[in-house]
Image (cartoon, rainbow, N blue to C red; front, side):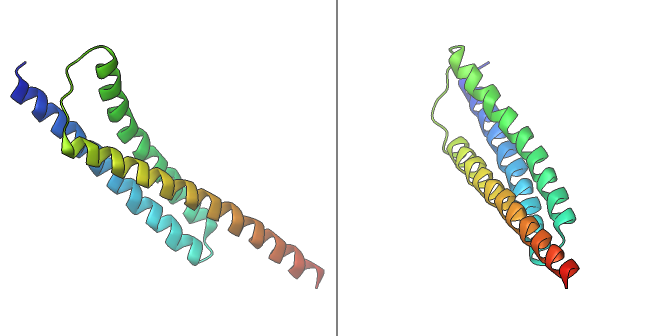
Length: 118
């Protein structure tokens, strides 16, 4: 395989990471929208969808990292760096959304318990 083909593979992998991460970000946004509508079931479903998409993106990144560990030549690729930035940013969004679901689930339970008392 020549250097040009290697770069094409790296760029193609980067684009896949960006696409899976972007799709996960959209699912995460839908989860946040569902939280704002007090639909925690839908929020949880959307978050699970986001996590599945992130697993796909993460596997592509992990394969590239393992290639570097095996000694495969890896030139710097701006698109791949952007893909990794996107991946990490969406991971942060997912973690925050998880916490918001926990918080709103807890509040929902407290309000429900209060309503039962009165």
